Image (tube, rainbow, N blue to C red; front, side, top):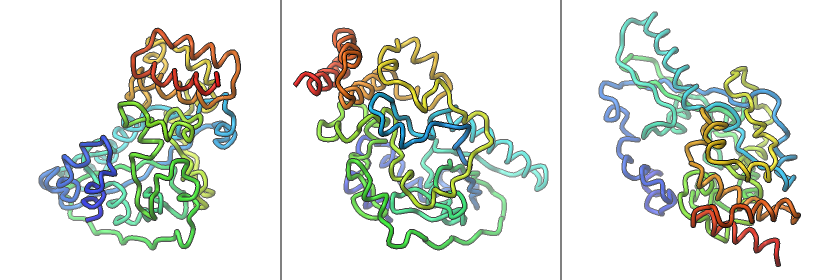
Amino acid sequence: MRLAGWLDKGFHGEMHYMAKHAALRSKPESLHPGTVNVISVAMNYLAGNPAEAWDVLEDPEKAYVSRYALGRDYHKVLRKKLGMLAQRIEAHAGQFNCRVFTDSAPVMEVELAGNAGLGWRGKHTLLLNRQSGSFFFLGEIYTSLPLVSDAPVENHCGNCTKCIDICPTGAIVAPYLLDARRCISYLTIEHHGAIPVEFRKAIGNRIYGCDDCQLVCPWNRFAKMSPESDFAVRNDLDRVDLVALSYWSEEEFNAKLEGSAIRRIGYERWLRNVAVALGNAQSSEPVVSALKYRLFQASELVREHVLWALAQHLR
């Protein structure tokens, strides 16, 4: 199994749950007894009229937030939708045993979605679909219903290596193989400690996640906008000023990001990420002042990143 080899290489980093529940990922019936089939679904998340991603990435005064996290937490939205879908199925098929999942349990979502014909695993390891690219969430209904299975689709990546070539930290170490320890999404979201110095410059102004491998993918020219209002941009996070974010208090962080996936990283890691981005910003009095403001009122973890950031401007 590819998962076992990936774990053996330590590519999961601090995501210990990946190893802890590895056996359950390949055995749906063990995760939810009675499961004989899995209904896999995809839901587009690009909503509203967000600022052009490349424009934000190229503006060091702005903060870049992964497109999936600009609105309401997808866990809440998709779980509710899956529950409604299960109810509709039950209305037609009668009562059945089921459980819904969306990135919330040891489920091999991309593998299941690929087997269900929703797309193929791209070289960046995300699911790709010819009609909608990769800007979508995946969800599952584990069910006891005796359903007819769909057929997998052909891989259409061909010789393209755009996603591999553009990765700022070289995290896609080979086609279909990601070293999460180098991935900016992992470093800014899943990683709890200090961000390795070797990756800080490459992070640029990305304060929560990274979309580069998706933005450059040719198949995403077919990405579809979502009609779901819950995914609409909140708090101008698609184009927000870095310096302004750096002054958010913990109370503001919790209030403004209530219902957002971002809130789960906590205030300390938020400040850590913002400090790195400020270190990569163009030197200016507002940037340096913002960093100095945090220097003596932050945790040891944040302070270490603030000192690094200040060093980038005071050379």
